Length: 264
Length: 270
Ligand SMILES: Nc1ncnc2c1ncn2[C@@H]1O[C@H](COP(=O)(O)OP(=O)(O)O)[C@@H](O)[C@H]1O
Ligand SMILES: [Mg+2]
Image (cartoon, rainbow over all chains, first blue to last red; front, side, top):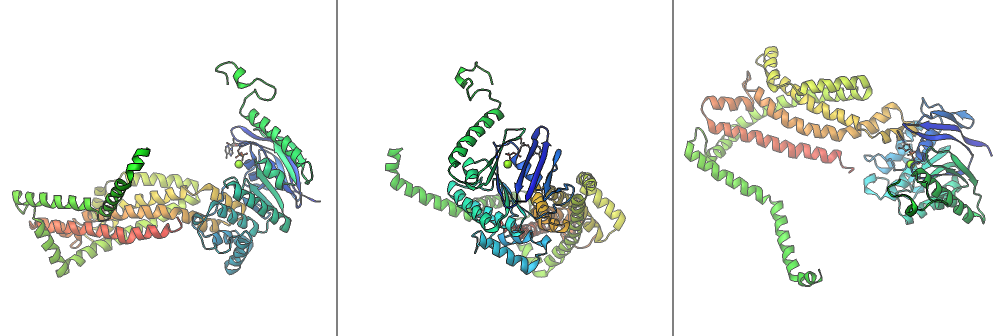
């Protein structure tokens, strides 16, 4: 299938280097999960792909065309942030309708489309609620409705279920999978949950600890070896977390008790 | 613990009744009433000790209040003061919002606006009163101008603070979804600034009332400040107290009726 997004040797330095020559590509209609320990630069990477942050080096191509970071994104992008980022002074419907305005969905038409997408994510009846009056799970659904309402070519999701309890998380995972199957969108989904990634992703990108490089890319077309993948990824992420915290013990090394007093 | 719980039955019930009573007392502001009665008693004692020129008795003030209410003097002077405040305060509001717009549109302007606010904040009321007497003479304009210049820094600093506190994460959301300049301003910058503006208006209006009556001592022939000073000149101390009471009532009423309602309205999404 055609390549939709290509990340080419993207590096990003803040005060410290965060991303180190990241490269991978995503085919049209693929569900890519990006995995990595906390603080390794997953959000930064997604913000670069979403044209919100310019990389220090490298480029991002969408359908073969490099992103121009000086301007607003040219493509329709749906972004589900780590927090819902709904405007608290607008109702759920107004929040969704707002992003339709630049696409010509003003007034009554925008309201109708917004209502339809809110129903699609199971929020029928809550259109006129303010975000502070509904639960965290419902706010996150509204944020998903907003991202879908622009009919995005690419859907970027940054740990969208991080704040949800296990129950809601499972329900929402199912929902996102349903949406992906029904709409055939290209999805880039950041998570630090291996369970989640292997459950819903068709391709997994494992990042190393900061400065993050691509550690492994795994095809996950379902089948019997999911358990093996989970095992392997679990081992990798543990190694990365240990590396990130600058601890030199762990796998095959000395245990904490055997280290000299006061070290570390 | 267990023993306390076992004994807790009737005692807890007693505590419940006691806390009901204290809630009721809070609702009726019982402690305020007690303080008020004490003040009245002290006031009466002072009045009989020093005479009614220094300290008119509470009864005289109540009678005076009724007199100005019946004669219509209350409306004349309170109205004149209110009119001047509304004009001066209104102009300050327009100027403050303009400064906020400049600060939000343009980084260089933001620095200038901050400095202008700092200078205005450091300028005494008296400077504006004297200057406005020179510029505008003995007219309505003097108290209006003074009110404008004193409330401007309060309003402007609140508006600018609001503009600077717009959540960058909301602006980032606006960028991904390609909202235009105007839509971003209308849907994000203005709504995040309004609570700051309303808070500034609340403080600013109180200041306006306090300042404009001082300016009314000079040059004008109406207004609460004028009539208070006039009452002092004709040795009617009871009327000085009456007009002071009128001022306090105006302040408390506008605060309750206008600003509390306004802040509830702009925060209805909370
Ligand atoms: N705007 C920024 N300025 C400076 N440092 C940043 C900025 N954004 C992120 N970082 C740093 O980059 C690193 C990666 O952050 P982030 O991409 O949020 O990680 P993740 O999403 O994987 O948890 C962190 O150490 C963070 O402090
Ligand atoms: Mg993150």
